[in-house]
Image (tube, rainbow, N blue to C red; front, side):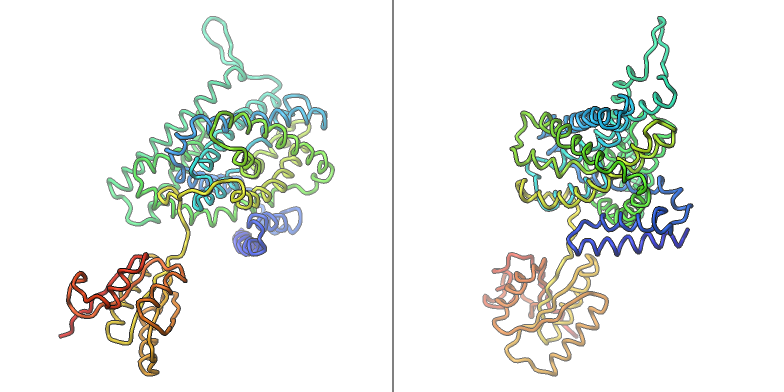
Length: 542
């Protein structure tokens, strides 16, 4: 079992990176690894790991939904009005109905079995859509109108609806009849009649439990200080989120996944600094969870049942997306401020299938439902076709179809290595500048450019400076540069050329900065640089 986990992590990571360097989504490489390692080809993954695959997928989906909740923007959702709500119901319903009718014609399914397939295929993949939308938010695409937020929220709501209908149909097809609930007066409500009430309960209780859990986390982690590090904050928050999902097996009255999404959203409202720390922690968790999710997706694909259903399956997927879902997208955005290009973006941005299909695609076959092997084949085909295509299409078409707006760093984690420029000479003050630079770099895991500007480079002095730099920045990634010219101009130009985030330099003497003679290097850099500057004053020696 341990060997299987090592194969999954190492091959999943490196093949994913190879795919990324080939300009292909990393998940394509991870799914390929799953197919190769899985029982259909290499049979390398142990049965123990395969038996826990569903639990590992649940953990991975919990992580990605928490990331989605921590990235939602209340103001943008409010600005959209009912668009996000309509996106949560209309595209999913229209696609499910279109697939149902197509399955009746193509595969000769009866209506309940066709609708069962429609619910499976109509569900959207948070594992593809959430990272894609969060990346768009970090780059600013569509943020002015809140398009990524509307897609994130609509995706979560649509999965709640389709999973409820799926469970109802599964019980009906397995037992041959629906279970009724008797009421006073001799009336009995069928499961179908109870469906609207179930939907309301699942959504409302999920949101309320998410808000309550967020309030508890703020109390424990911030007000009572039960934790000391961001790692501990993330561990506690992840455990609470997973508990919300697991408890749905005992209390199936609320949506655990919607509760997790809501918890992340309310954490921003209750304690934005805590949400920021957790955002970074869940980004780290997703690095590992993503590998397990997509490798195990690949391992679960039944290659032997794809052949016969390949062509009709592609036709069915095309009908569901291009006819059913497109109609739902149009109806969802009628009356909104979205122009036609933004509506068109929903095709690549809101079509990916993966997580839900892998989790429930095999359930009809396991329950002995007629046509279960075809349902499993279509579910696997939808993963192979739409997951890689969606992961590629979202970043490819966003710049062509969406407008770019200002990024809100309080709602997304912007992963970028900080660069600090340390401007030094060969005087003892250089040691103090390098010491302060090293302190800042260690706090923010930054990289450093050490810049020396001189008209005449004395070999002895330069060797001393390089030795001090190597000693003080031994555990920091740095680059040593020497240039000639005017010191202040060279410092500002280098900072601009290398996209530096902060400049650190020294100032001799003991005068305050506002009385430094005009023309000094530190004063000139302060006056001409648009980049933040930290000035280290020389400490007198006794």
